[in-house]
Image (cartoon, rainbow, N blue to C red; front, side, top):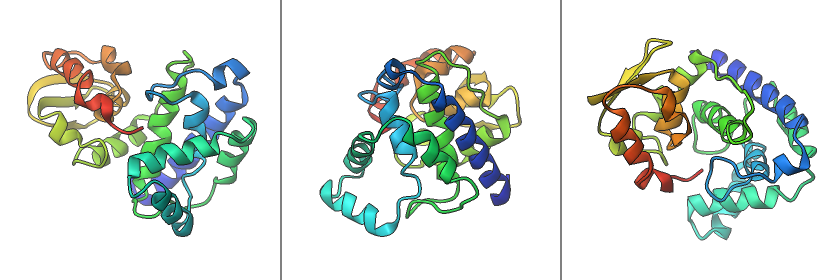
Length: 217
């Protein structure tokens, strides 16, 4: 995907997620997401901060004493104080804009909305399909040790191959399946491992139950 394609995919995912958020009940907003310690509300709030500017980001990092993971968590918690109906509107307000947070490429907003969309949908048992071309572009960005996932380093000894598009990475025990499930595994989410098959799946399950569970949301 070229940059224009990526930004179109980001817009489509943000709009689709906003429509999904419009349907949530009070109970669903307060439900746990796939991110340990994060409610659905917190994840949605985090996604609305994707266009944070340099001054605000610098202030938040200073407040977190230079700890990026703490900054991400704390800013989400503060944003989560807003009324729930604000989050779909804030996501829609981003449509058509190419503004992004400082220090990231244009692919990180794509990774965020794809993966966090599943962090919301899967525990609520809501169907949210991940387009294979967008998931492929995200996996390409995640695999070469993108912080905080460090996928190539953490998942060494396992080879991944998508069955719904042309994508593969790694060496060792094979794990294959939909690119969406692979992307979730690369970003530390065990929820979709059941969609993968091959001799590497058991090792992958073990890895995701260990150090990867501490990966920042």
